[in-house]
Image (cartoon, rainbow, N blue to C red; front, top):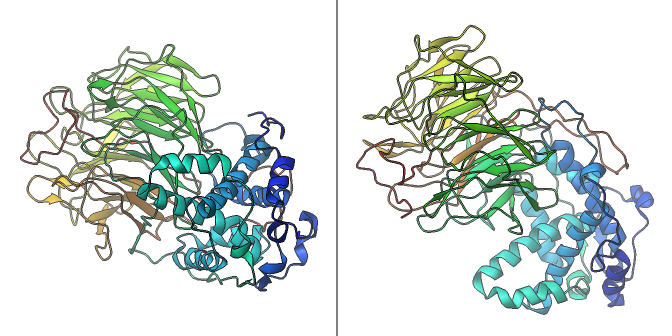
Length: 610
């Protein structure tokens, strides 16, 4: 991505913004030392806010320090051959300026148009809240250090941005948005003098030495500013945030989403500018810098459109439809390191490889490809995509391995393969694919199998202490265990139970139900280091969720940092480790009424689009 000139937009020109910010001299004209001179500020020392403000340039510099922490923790998939670029290569100066201008303008709008100025007491309370509820204390500590452990800077450059986002969302939900639209355009002037007068901020202490979580425990995710209730959405883990997008609530097909930051336990909405049309039964993969969504279903039609979302700039790029695969839903997608491969769905046995660097598609071969199917699973092994199971007029226990280099298919063995099924889950361990659960046309299953592609063989998973039979559940791989949680059974309904499967011992252990989210299915799960984050879903009686939880599994490997070249030094400490595991794109199964018969015929009838 090329850097944009700082003069590319007159509205975001720093000189113009500084002039606007300085119009209230008492509030915004007393400056802190230059960026290079900030090191003398003593950590933990209270700051007298009545004698300090920040220039726009300083805010931009601090914003870059914040973004650098997040970028270091971004997962750069090991399959990507090129080295992870520097922050400056993926985020321009103009984009940093826009982030700062946005939170300043919205902060001023709260005062001018909503009569809700942000006070220093609120900023102190927001810093305290972050420390109290952080789910990634090591990342929050890095953020504080990147801002020199200066409570005034943390309040103004981190807490203000998070708090403003939440308050604007709350007020916008209560009032007409038209009036606020004018505020966003015209409201940038200054940070309220009342909010900054005679206050000494105190830096809350982040606990040190303790593990970030206790094994086999649940902690709720914040609902403040979370996306609206939904199921059949998709989620990816970036290394510092969980992004959820799309889905359905019984009435609406969403083109909205949110980014959940566990280090600050906060949500930020994803932009809808240039976003794909609302949908569900689509796919999503994480590339290392973007989330790519594609396909799905909306109002009676399958789709062959998609988009690439950059969380750093909160922006969308449309994916090309030239040579794209035929429209479909309930398909699968994997990320290879340079391409997204989509396959199957809507009874099709075709697919395509999408290259985001050229915004182009290449068809996958159909020679020796498995028969068409949907609600199957797919994993990426590092060199092949393995698809298995699904529905094609009947449940299947067949699959195939696709090699994108050779553009060819090899069938998976059916000897000792698990029983035919759909709506199951699959994870890749690096050497095996583990499938589990699902529906066989009559009953839900609590069986599974481990497929070893190097010898084309199956080994059954133990059913001793396995969770109750279920489908429509997600699964995550920690590096040593597969965790499943939630799901549905005709006999029982929705679950808030789960299990941890260890392939090295072929054994199961139950997940705790203490403080677990309420029972649900058709939700999503991502792995963040040694925790699994679940969110959204459906509870079987017509209700959808915007709640979730973080499940701690300390058996996972310790996170390791993703190295990036540094172009512009920032005052931040050496990063603590961050996760590197590439999220596996596996479908969140979804029922589609126009494809008949449905994968299951049950007394459990969930709302579906007309």
